[in-house]
Length: 97
Image 1: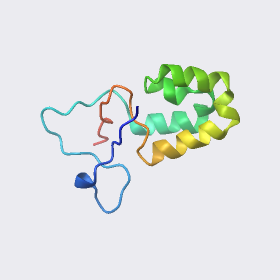
Image 2: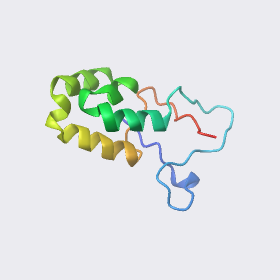
Image 3: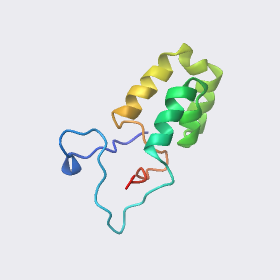
Image 4: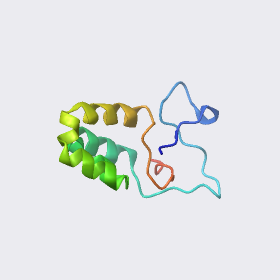
């Protein structure tokens, strides 16, 4: 089950993708938001975005159905840009700074 990564406590000027300040105890995975966004945009029909985020079963299903004939690809792209699709291990996106 995906958890929301966006937290209103850390929102800045209405942005969808905000990062909490670097503190001990927070776990950042090796996932770059920009890389996954580009993978989803160009190879999302093949399920590469889901496979990259370790959603292996869903990535394989997306590959076999060719992104749900484009519908699943579009839904995943919307979920990713709104912050609803996050890494499967629950880690945060790597900060880009």
